[in-house]
Image (cartoon, rainbow, N blue to C red; front, side, top):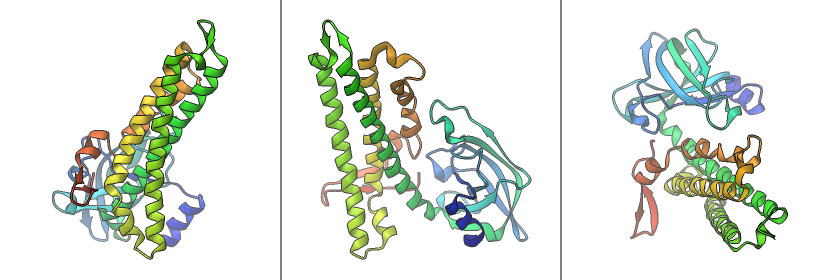
Length: 289
């Protein structure tokens, strides 16, 4: 697989997607119902996957399926060629991220060779932590764009005889946006720095990134909530202009949920993370969601 698939994906010759979420189990990964039943040298896979980013143009899908009993221990990851008989995908028209190729995938007696077994779902840990950090970084960048666009607009727009940047109520909005954008940015930089230091000191990279698991989830919550706040504040500054299709603020506002929900919705991430007063650090009760 490494030679025939991984290299082609890394080079960009082939595309791949991660198919975990289902209609009845998004963040609740332990209760996935897609099955992979052994049949000779193959697994026969049946089930469906929903909200799969890149599913419409993927050549391969990494599918989480139940090869054993209940719970997380019974799940495995399989590499599935999307051209196999029984594999089908149809587009999902989402609020934002229109270019994501989000798909609803159906697997109907798809025969996958046992050589395509990647392993148990513990390999998802690294993906989830990295995904949440990546989403947090993207969300805060979008929030910063909302701030920058608002500042530029306030310098040229007049109301009640003054430029908006001279109106105290507007200046307070800009100050609050800047405060939160810079605070989130500093937190994300601290997480990234810790990872770099751990790697340079010779620590195992996988173990070091897992130690930031809870904080990565909370950073995502913080960043996406700040993005939502900045998008709304920017919309209030732009007024009716933010309600017009094609305006950058209007476009950014539609991206809020595309970052807040994937990788774990707020309530899930907050509920799974605890703050340990003794060690003054965050601990995660269950990384599998």
